[in-house]
Structures are given as structure tokens and as C-alpha cells.
Length: 168
Image 1 (cartoon, rainbow, N blue to C red):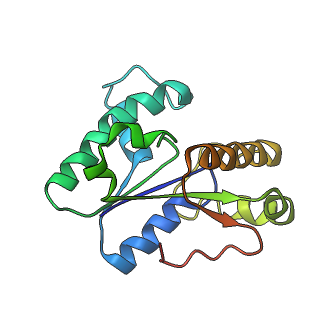
Image 2 (cartoon, rainbow, N blue to C red):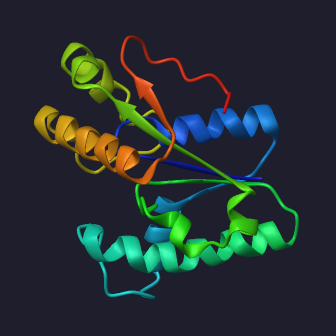
Image 3 (cartoon, rainbow, N blue to C red):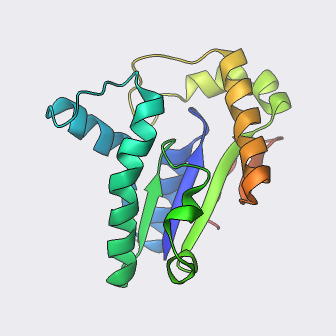
């Protein structure tokens, strides 16, 4: 089984992946770690600020890792904001049946009511170089909700409290 965890920055993708790892004992791949390895090693001229180019670049690698894991009967959790919402186009039905996708989405109400806490937890798992504005976070979550609806993808809506148990 492959579990894809997508979502905007600060939605808890890495923390959720960690909880799933602890519950199911599946290894996980942070696309951010792959990104930083490729950037720091000089394997790409892209930088951390090249998000639009990073998605197709990283996804080209990650989708082949996913196919290899499926072909070998291996479980894997993949988390990151670089999973395209049309990811299904890259897999035939036999692969798709082995993949579960979840997008973490915070509602505007949740962000408005809990923004200080969201920022307070931003470095719990990974150290961030920059924070995010409330308006940018609201806009990115709304965009992701719209894309999930457009592509018929499952999401986990975070509205009243932030408690992601290790369930799919």
C-alpha cells in the first residue's frame, strides 16, 4: 500500500506521516528531504524558491519510486506539497488500486481561530526557514480544497480541532 499525504504548508503532513509510520510501521519519504538532497548536492539548479518547477521535477522521480515500491509489494508513505493533484494520470488502474491519497485541509475558520498555534507548531518536526502569513495559508488551503473537489480526491478537513489519529 502506498499512502500519499498532500496539503498546504503548516497542515501537519510530516506529523501525520510520522503517526502513520508509528501505527502501521510503513517507512515514509519526505519529498522535502528529496528536494533538499538534490538542491544541496548540486544535482539541480533549482532552489527552494522554485516551487512551480520543483513539482514536476520532484514528481518525475517520486512517481517512479512509487511504481517500484508497488511492483515489489512494498508499503510506503509519501508526504509533501509536491504531489500534483492530477497524480492519477501517471498510474494505470493496477497501480492506482494500491495507492491511497489524502490531502490535509484547514478551513478558513480553523486558521483564523488557531493561527498562533499553527505558527507555534511550525518547527515541531522540521525546522522552517520562513513562516507563512495567515492570508497565504488561507488561500493555499482554499486552493487545495478546490483542487481536491475538481479531481475527486479525498481530503481530511481540519475545522474544529487538530487531532489526526493514525487512521486512513
